[in-house]
Amino acid sequence: MSTRLLRLAAALMALILAGPAAAVQFNVAEIQRHGAWQSMTLSLGKERLYRALEGDNYADAHFSVNVSQGACEAPWLELRVDLGEHQPESQVVNLVPADLRVDEQTIHSGQAEFRTERGDSGFYVRFDLPEQPLLLDEMRWGEILRLRMMRGPDDPWFMIFALDGAGEAMDRMAQACRP
Image (cartoon, rainbow, N blue to C red; front, side):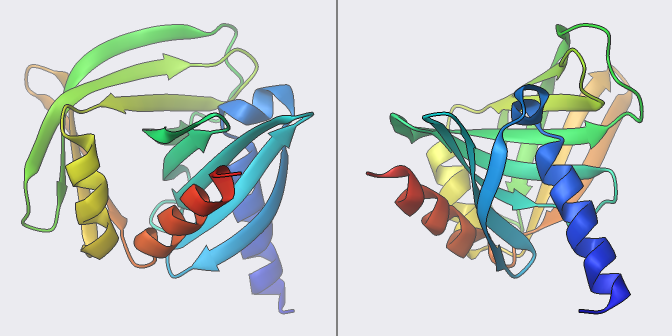
């Protein structure tokens, strides 16, 4: 394996392990690549989380769809951005308006909760969207996911994520979650 591929694999593992689950040292297994996305299983004892993740567009951020054992039909969407330093406490920093859109499809408006996790270098954004099932379906077939979060009245934050492989990654995640 080339040095570049080894570095890429190490960076991707660091992103995966840097999620909220990493603060309690979840084990990451069954990683599979799907275009720009990956699917994986995170475990701690008997507890299992399943994740579909896009981490190619930004060196310090990734977007994921997650489900947990026993709640396979209740996925949550999360964005993680590395702050570069461990946070002293877990706290909700802000609740802001957010819009997510796949290609030129529906604009999904909702809320984004900004939070930090004690001992973790990440800044997390968890999305609450009234029509999340429709967004997830659009993500399966789209090319680009666009995010807009309003940090203040005139302070939007924009990000984009590739959707190549999102459908396959989410299908594998859902399949792994079902017993």
